Length: 285
Image 1 (cartoon, rainbow, N blue to C red):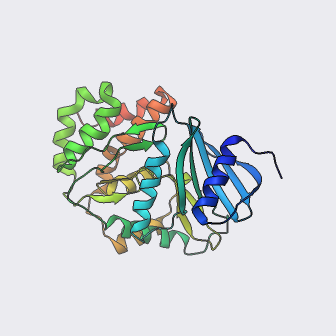
Image 2: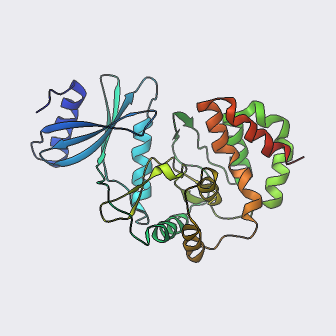
Image 3: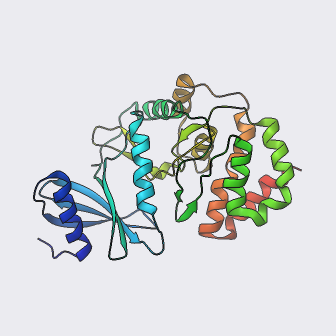
């Protein structure tokens, strides 16, 4: 057995308490792919688990918010997600303990099922845009103050909160454009950070959704982001629209929605993405 870091000894104790059995961590393997948290596979006497750790001082409440989001998505019974066992803080380190999803080979109907699952998730609604708690998108805090208006929520809680300098000169024009072209729909439960890298292939060849930034918003936000970085084939969209048809004109609205993830990328990865934001804003004139 490996010599364990104190945080792993703490997780070992908490996991033993959670499942009511004495659990021992046998091996720890680093898992690549994340740029914010440290990801590790824990091989234990009770099976395999995945843990994420980071600094609670730098990212306060990140994993507690992610746990709540995963549990909310899980409660709908619509999409495949890793089970979340616990989140916590120990000695200024935050951790999140999840089911480890063993990688499989994609089934032929992978994308069709994925699109249908997302459509069924989006059918879960409430009467306000937002969420009862704030969370994160990437390493950035994401506020979710409730609003009855999608226009207000999108402008204030998404665009202005993260990109005021770029957005302010176009604020009135954006408001007018959103009101003109965005169809009125009930708030839909969103994954919130739906790019190709946040899908895994499970052991039976099915899609698993990971790393959500959950809130109730316009469902076209998720769909727009799938097109921003690509990787989702036509079968995905056909299946989605069969289960929950979109309103006509989505392609015209898509760039407006993608202002938000692009502003996130400006904050996280630098001004290289600012030109894309400016291009969309200039197109409004």
